[in-house]
Image (cartoon, rainbow, N blue to C red; front, side, top):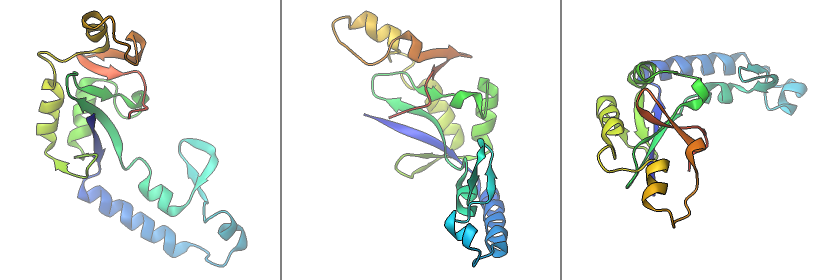
Length: 163
């Protein structure tokens, strides 16, 4: 079992998002049958030009970004998010510092403490996939070298799907 960590916006960004949501909702044509039928989804989705978002989907879009996971016995595993928000360790740390960090239980964590924890967690005796397989050849564990890599000295998952 482990703990997942997320980057969420600071209060200023949340206020800006709220104002945009408020303005979008205020301009909606509440009686337009075609808008009602499509759940008021008339905002182009930045991920998919064929899809549309409704004002609430736009408000919550990329609000909670998975940063990584801490697991007992393992080195911290960073989520690179397919290079969407950062590509280097320096960009990652700037991205974290530009927001707030919360764990999967909704507990806010100081960003500098989170960065320190992520850098130090399991570094002395923690496993990565390769070291685990070397020390435990008889045990079958999910994953092999293709499922993680090291970027700027950070253990990074090659997947964005974390449990």
